[in-house]
Length: 339
Ligand SMILES: [Cu+2]
Image (cartoon, rainbow, N blue to C red; front, side, top):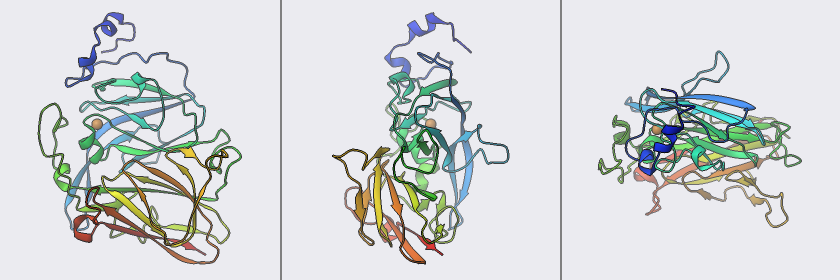
């Protein structure tokens, strides 16, 4: 059903419209303008990952129907969205298999376009989110419908905002980089991934979403038995190159990170440091641990002074006890190789 001209429909919208029983419709985007970029996403289910112990782990994802021919539309995490500061962006979400939303985390659109369940549209059919990033940086997008479950099941991806001139610097006139690496850390509790009811845990249902006991630990979609060698996780650079790390903690743990080389922390949560006199960048000496809470992003510049292999260690720690998850097994290691 399309109701672009259906003002009577809009008059029927109430708070409960956004609650436990999302409507099937294609509501009009308020203040809609022509887009510079349009991204088409489909809420998708049913992709299986093979864990190191042989177990099949079901994940949900956003199928990105805007990626060029030949690229995979369905990935875990979902395909990155990449736009430029100041562009008007339309994210067109279709949901044939159940209600979802898209929350562009860290972007500040109008409420109707914010994709937060219960306070704006939960999309039972289709909706076009309109947004315009004001700051370049590292963000991410995720479903905000029954978030604890849908986010854990994999409905998220990186969102990178480049300055108007494009990739190569953090912001216009800011620090530059030659090599770029995204690290998206995630932990998985297989019990959550066996749930197939979209609404499990929502609106009075109790399926134990308050008990999260992760058994699998991943970086950028790679299980931690492969992260030392997989090209999606290890970094290769030439001596003298500057490496930008875009690090997102998409796990439900505290992520404690230690790098084997010095780093400069240049941006946090999509906000640049060093751009204003009251907010400087922060040097992080080699081996000094730092921590990211769930959903936090760090942008780091590495410029290793010599050829070699620099280890990277990430520990997934319990948010209350601080202990490494899964009796000490919750660790991901990778490396930065400079040749
Ligand atoms: Cu969802």
